[in-house]
Image 1 (cartoon, rainbow, N blue to C red):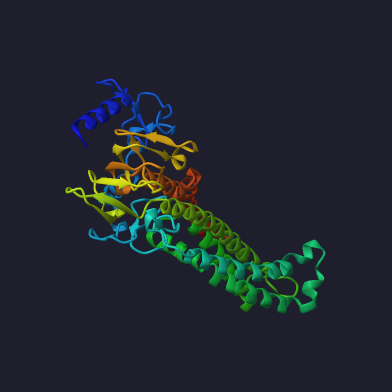
Image 2: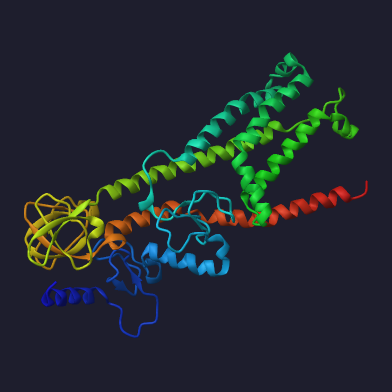
Length: 414
């Protein structure tokens, strides 16, 4: 960029910064245009986005990376990513200090880990969604007849149990309920066990403890009803079981997980569609004036690039030579092309019109507007409602309280 163009750009940036020198209050800026700085939370004059506090508008990847390592200083055992790792990194939406190189569940809250960078997402079905969907359908198919056997007498279908007899019905319930608990609900049992092992009690602690308590009690009631006090047994010596309660809990939790994973997969497809909008290569102008086709990853800040008619603008930059109109509807939503002349900014992934442009790259890689939009969508996808954190906090206190009360009641003399 020439000195004249650089000076003009600096003057434009200065005009967008209305924060007086010496101001000590909250400064609001645009995540897409950090040169826009205001003292009030208004809308960005360039893209219309709502301004946010300056600390929150830092580059998402940079901010997350710094936060993860800062948290790692206090809880480094949760960050197992090597310093020279360049592959996919999985993290927890609730606890960003948890970082792993393989998918799994969060050791703190039990939630499934998600990709830290949306750009690392792979094509094809989500293996976790496929697995949970299979577990849900198996659980649902086995839970429905289990509910009919158990709840039938309460809705006028008491004859269902009479067909098989009470003892045989209890064995059928065991056969139907056991696969639901031990196979369909296995991921939740593992997460619940890990929560007790690490003493990070959470929602899965409650699920695991409740389901296993109901199932174990019911198994013992079917196999050895005689060991229970007489007050637990009916006139025929049978003890009431809770296979249907355990199965319904597992099936409903699986349904919630499947719905969440499907919503996440839909957002993932939208992110991949955004990434596909970017150009795959750029035409770089060498110092001698010749041109070469290079991958987008090789473009550096300061490179001069030629954008031919009908091509996508490869990266964010400033027009140096030429005159054309650019379709910026993917950014602004306005279908009317915007005229571009020397000194005008251009955005990566927008489409050049009929003219030819020579531009200078000012933002590449994760710094481009498209990459930041993708990262913001990915961050929104990973976010959880604040109530989830409160639920885990309640579970952390509720579980030991219930266990304590149970032991106190058991030791209380009759």
